Amino acid sequence: MGSIQHPQSATTVFLDQPPSCLEFCPEAPDYFIVGTYLLSENKTEDGGIEQSKTGSLQLWKLDPVSKTLSQIQRIALPYAVFDLHFHPRHKNLFAIASSVGSVALFQVSNSTTGDASATPTPSITEIWTKQVHEDPSIPALFLAWAPQNWFPQLAADGFAVTFSDSRTAVFGTEEDIRQEQSVAEWGTYEAKQMIEVWFVALSTSTGSPTAKSPIPFMFTGNDFGSLHTRRFDNTAELDDPDEHVSPMLLEHDDRARHHTAGVTAILPLDVPLVDDAPVLLTGCYDESLRVYHATRRGEVLAEQGLEGGVWRLQLLDTTRIPAEDDASKVSEYRFLVLASCMHAGTRLVRVTCKYEDRAPNWEIEVLAKFTEHESMNYASGVWEGGQDTTEILCVSSSFYDRRLCVWTVDL
Image (spheres, helix red, strand yellow):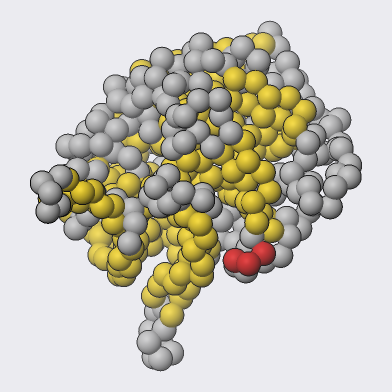
């Protein structure tokens, strides 16, 4: 175990509104988008308090050499932004989840000023906004794009979205996702109790090397600390033309046996199923990062306290080390993960799985702690423009002090 690094910021700037989410643009790696969430309180004539939520989308440029930041564009929105994610395949598209139960799709496009020699500057344009909950007082908390082959129809595209009233819904289309009129609700999963569903993850697993088709999973985490697993059957024939999601093979809830507070982040790991169940990384309000085996009762394979609620997990790198006696087998997996840890700042973590005597042995190691944030670190990102460098260039944010920091870790 090496010593933990404590990086210092190279740049700090302050935003006009609190940052709630942040993601780098895959096709313009020096640029990232920040979503903001501003809660305003106004006194009403009868002496009461009226709350309103507004927000913005902000396009920022990171100079990877000078490590400075500059704002390129700001779009004011009549609602707060809870979540923001780029499409996994159409990498110039991203969607946001809003405080009024809507999802909006945006495009990042390069525009030149008419000067052919000028470097094009990206800009954000809205494509559509769709009400995904019939009650605009129910916020959409999280959005997850469906990976390739998650739907039974190969042409299908879509996303899952969670809400504060315990609902999770799947929306999709067999047309172009940019055509709002073709995007429809394909499945709704209600919970037994009214509770925030903080997170949803959609994944496909190959299960075993002999599996004919990938197995679609949906994982959700709620404010009670329950992790809910749904497994779908992509081999089943869909009898009804109105069906677009494969039938559910199994569904189980671990009844908060392993997380002592709300489950706020779920990262499916690309390892083979263990006893026919997937392995995940989970983040929780109880300040622990866990390697979690999503069996019916659930099992914690490794656990590490990160000193703050683990709000978001971003996979930065996966390394597979082949077995010495058989190069077709993997003897060790290494996952490099960035964790946004609320009041504790940002953590860089390595999660390792070694196959010893054929049994997987999991370990979690904290490599770096960035602790300059003075309030909730809900959003962080990593510059993806570097090639073959050991330096990791990070931008992280904090909510109430409206801070964006640039810092580096050398691995």
